[in-house]
Length: 282
Image 1: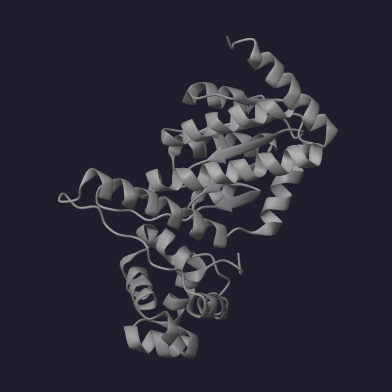
Image 2 (image 1 turned 45 degrees about the vertical axis):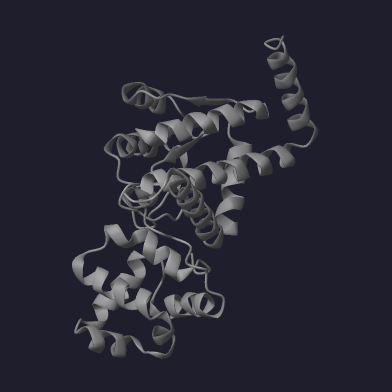
């Protein structure tokens, strides 16, 4: 978590922050270079808040404390991301809207790439490779991402499953064991259906991986490993929609590493799948 991009993490967590925390976020986003040279008490004085409020803000956005946030912001200021985000307006042509959507997706991918944590990726891959069974869970729009993950990993030769209906998810979760791994996908990390599944999995002692946008979400607290995305909301497009491309990319990365680690077994499984699919081609 300490190596992640500070500005991207603050933007990603913004909608979950309280009013005082959003004031701190606005202050940092407008002038990150000042934070690098300010002490925590200077920031607190500027905003007329307690130092403890600033400290809690740092933890809410995924850092151990103020110093860790300053280090991340220093990296941002030295090598800032180009701000390519533009709001879509009613006056835009279809081509302009398409260009802005593509630009927003590029920014989401770049911001997510900057906060990737190598240790969390390594641990996720190790869990997937050692699992007797892997099951993907998601609700609403995240269910589509879970289904895509199943569609990829079924090619690996590993035992993978996915259910889209909430009652079936709970039933399936209740049958998993300590030898299995569950991957839970939720942009907000606060979907009741997904949290209910996570609680059942915890009761069963099942190892869990979360893919979510918020470091301090109920889901990330319930799971053994968390992989994070970063996305921003626009007037005509929710951040959940923008995050899908990052979630899909994380799953692509996990699948590719798993297949490389499986070596010849992975290649044989992929070849079997290709041969089976070829029967459907004319």
